[in-house]
Image 1 (cartoon, one colour):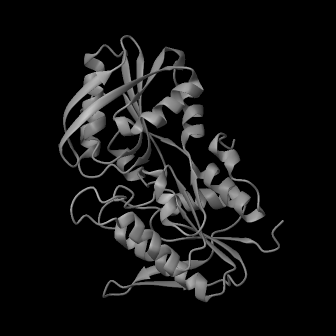
Image 2 (cartoon, helix red, strand yellow):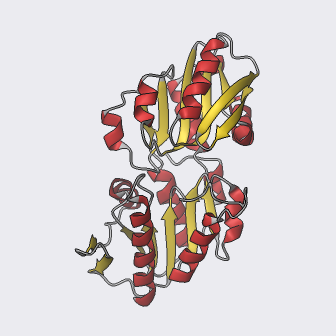
Length: 321
């Protein structure tokens, strides 16, 4: 059992999630301020000691222009804790940014996910907790431990509680998500379908083909992130045209950038269910089809287990009650 205590810190990217995690852990957020000077430089003031404490910094990614501000806040908070003699510093990043830039897929392309890993470690981070990495090999970019949690247990519970899931089929909107969809289908003992898509250019899908049978069933689309939602909207059109009774999308990271909410509202999707890894409360006001799965209990339990030196692998297949 650890002899020091958990100190939970957060920047300005997702304070609502941080409050839920703190409440679940039965602690208060550390008293601190993250602000900008008039010249837009970011600064941090911590009003409590973190010397020899087990520090967890929860910082997600707010889509839009503030994404890079959130990253800079995280790096500065890590450095502040390092120079304040924290025993261990864990970055809790529910949505790892730049995860899609994980390989050199064309000439002169940067591998930005690796750059971010280097920056976090250089700032003084000793451990990373994240969820549903876009590419699991990103864990190999780090020389410190990375716990990649899964939203699957919480998703399973949501499906069982909210759908007539025995009359459903799990659908992957692309070949890359087939492994995720088949794992979910196996746990629910359901059939699986796949949509093959061809892209003319990034973030733009040109043609889709369904592989599998969805006639007369509830089609549950599962993916790790919804950015512009173009893929989900076109997939819903293909599924309805193929005889699906209803189409629901369940996504871990609801980035919902640009006109995503307008696309969802005018689409054939009956609902889009996202976790709260990314803040989206404002978007819910303009999109009645959006619903939320709370993953704060999973993050809180991961922090507690990490602090106490317990195994985190239990959370790969179980969602805390």
